[in-house]
Amino acid sequence: MAIPTSRTNEVAEIIIDKELCNGCGLCVTVCKDFSLIIENDKVIKSTEPLFGCLACGHCMAICPTGAITINGRTLTPNDLFDIPAKDSIGSYEQILALFQHRRSIREFKDKNVEPEILEKILTAAKTCPMGLPPSDVNVLVLNGKEKTRAFAKDFSGYLKSLRFMTNKFFLALMRPFWGKENDELFRNFIDPLFYAYIDEMDKGNNHILYDAPLAMYFYGSPYSDTADPVIAATYAMIAAESLGLGTCMIGGIHPFIQSGKRAKKFRETHGIKFKSKEGLFLIIGYPAVKYQKGINRSFASIEMIN
Image (tube, rainbow, N blue to C red; front, side, top):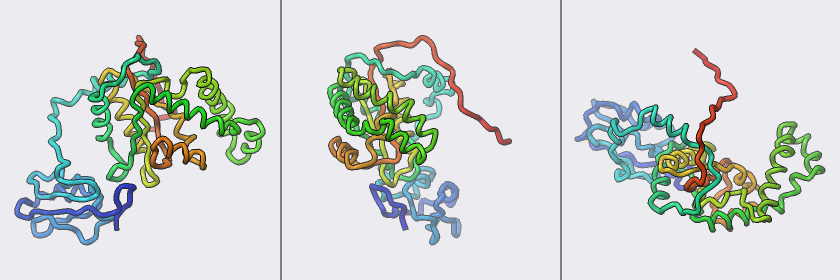
C-alpha cells in the first residue's frame, strides 16, 4: 500500500546496512510509519508499517552512522545535505525584525528580478514542510513585467464572462443556498473586486498583478494538502524580503480559475497543470516606496488551554 500523489504512487525502498547499524534506535523513534523496529540490537524493517515508507527521509537524516538509505518517491541519498551550524541561524529577534520589516508592496521599480535572486527564492521555498512527501506544490513563474501584464489582461478578459456572478438577480437567487456570509462577501467584496480588476484593466491600470516584475502562482494537485501551496508561498515571501525585495500575496485570482469549462481552458492556456483546492499568487519586485512605520496586528482569538 502506498499513499498516492500526482508524482508517485509507490512505496519507497528502505535499505539497511547492518554492518554500520549501532542499534541506537533513533530511526525507530522518528519513523511515524512504524516501518522500522529494533531486533537483536539492530534495526530491521517492520512487517506491519502504517502506510509503507513515504520517503520523508527522517530515518536517513538522523542516522549517526549512515546505516539507512531511502530510494523512491523522488528521494535518494544524494538529497541529503549537512544541516547548517547553529551559529549561522538567525536569532528570534532577527527573524522577528524581518517579519516586522515586511509590508505588502504593490508599487515596484521598473527593474527585473535577477535570475540568481529568483533561484534563491525558489530554493528557500522548496525547504517548506508539506502534508505528504513528495511535495505536490506546483509553481507557475511569470518572469518580467510584460509577462505579468499579459497574464492580468487575459485574466481580466476571462472575468468578463463571469460578471453574472455579481448580478443582483443571481445574488438573490443564490443567497438561500450559500447563506448570509457569502452573500455579504459577494456584494461587498467580489463586486468591487470585479470593478477593480476588469474596468481598471480596460483603462490600462493593472490592479490584478500591479505590473510586478515577477509573479509566482503556488498551487497544489487533487492529492495535495490544502495548506501546502500557502506554506510554500509564505516561505518564498519571507525569502524575497530577506533579499531586499517587496512582496504581496494576491488571493483574488485563484478561486476564479478552479471550476467550469472556462476555468479549465484558462488554466490550460497558461500552463497551470491542475485545479487546486488552495493556491496563492505572490508578486515580487524592488519596492518603489518605503514605509516608515509598522502596524501591530492581532488574531481573532487566542484560547489558552493549560
